[in-house]
Length: 65
Image (cartoon, rainbow, N blue to C red; front, side):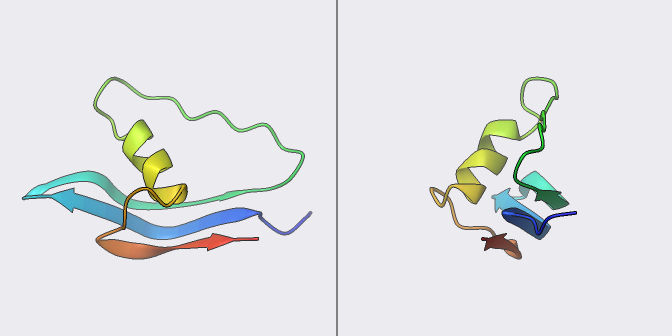
């Protein structure tokens, strides 16, 4: 199995008292197809904005490469 190109540990972001993304740990490896699904307001776009560097997490870490 290859080394993850993107990995998150306990990724969390809060806006006021609301956790938009709460404790997400995941890994994405080259050559794998991954789908992120969820209802409106579940935090999918916020998670992507965290991983892409557009937002800074309240807690947790993002590893790239």
